[in-house]
Length: 639
Image 1 (spheres, rainbow, N blue to C red):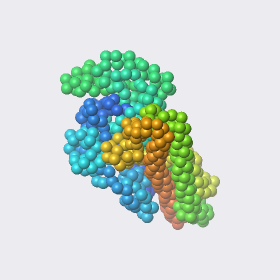
Image 2: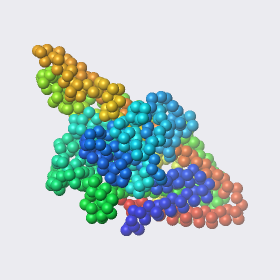
Image 3: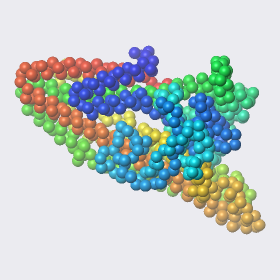
Image 4: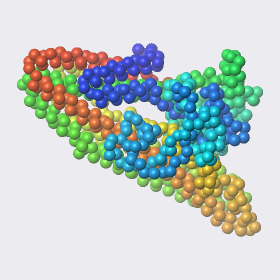
């Protein structure tokens, strides 16, 4: 088994999930069976969200079009991508545009599935949350998708939020979701770099695109360094090798820059025109020269392989948890069947455990629920404070620099400096936010596990079942954090969190009007604003520059605060729903144990013997399933 391929391991896990679900149904645990079915669904087609990022006019959209074999992303020699384009798998080619929607208050149980994970839908009566009201996507011709992405508006001139496309492509079949993003010019000195970093931190992977016209600039290396720090799966692509004969020298220089910067990312050179020509002529040598076969292989080996391994780990954990609950019921039933004189004591212990389990989901639930609310309220307060302190620090630094300079002359230098410093500070705040969410999930998990641990197990309380019913490998596993913490933060879909945070880059023409304060820091605008004071009114120019800085920092803080609040609200709900599910499973498990113990206590001798033999057979089946699950979980690793 150690030498099995990832594909074979996935097939074995699918078979194991099916058999474990059947075992759960036979044990009258449809809730566990449904959970295993959901795990199987995620294993087969879980989304893996990859952003395609880079500076303007580097060929991001062209690379995606060549990769997909159809021009669905906006590509133009002059115009640039105005809104994100999301491309996922579909049985037929379809496209939609989604307009910007107003903010309104709706019950969280009515939220669309892209706002809440399907496996953790809120229970009835869930709290009301403020969330963007999603207008229904409007179908469009797939051939018009690229034009909409470039314009950023629908046919009526309304600003768009996203262009969404479904294509029947093998590359996308396993769950890969690609997002073509608006360009970021100037690295961390770009106006939208902080928003791009927030988006990258919530994605599963990123493809950073440069081109062969020149070696990586300092701004690109800086962007790559930050991207690698917030997103663990980074792949670099160098385009336009057909246009520049010296591309191999540029490729070597770029790889050296990556090594010198300590960036662990492979760089692949490609040519979109060569790929298109190779597909038209059927020339395999030309296709190999285009570099796209290597790019497809790297996407599969480095990006999708990690998604598959994570899905396998989650599936194995789901099997493990389900089998533990089934074994607890069998272990509880055994003494009631084989030890008639201990039946009263067994029933007493079962009843005691039932009360403890109900307490975890009832009265004691307030402990971990309060921990969820308190910790995430603390996180919100901490982020607000961090943003306020960062803006005060930036305003002081900018004020000092303005005071020591002549804004009418030095503003073109102050602008990129301020944007770089602002992006650095906001990215640091966001990184600390993700760490705080992970810590909060760990604290909630500890509180929940403490309450669940008090429930105990009837069989362990009685000294353990007979040798034939011992499943010691199932012991010692608490609720864990496999699907909470950072997974809660990063579990948000591209069509919600990532797109929302990218929209504050002000690249969209509609947003240049909606957010005029941000546009104040545009070099041309700001230079014009202070240019009228060149006639000796230096103090007035400095005052105007200070007001422009304050306005920019205020808008940047508001954008970052809104994105942080959205992320905190989403993560709080995901963590809460995860442990609500765990609590419900614990209650159902104990209820089943009680029913099994009561049936055994009142069974006659012949029926008890028959059931004992059946239970031994069931334990053998559970033991075999568990052994297979642990073998599969232990044989895989993320490469």
